[in-house]
Length: 121
Image (cartoon, rainbow, N blue to C red; front, top):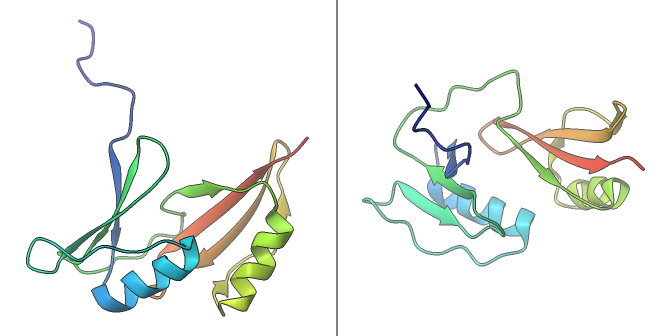
């Protein structure tokens, strides 16, 4: 039987404990205006390029993972590192070259582990 499940991700939920703090932090991180919360102040949609959406979700307690929730691409990881430092972001690992990509991991204000990657030439 062929699977009816499409091989496309619709959205990624980021658990947050303080929606206003998360809205401000992600707004600065991504340099974008953040809309108002919906669902009794528990959901904020972050506008992304491409099909996959990113949603701040205040419905459930934050349970941090030892693996990044997802990653964003960048074309300049060194500049990204400097930018994160300027925002006083908790950077977990220095830039790491793992072969096909270089990575950088950091925490959001709730301790969610996030990653940024740059393709290695």
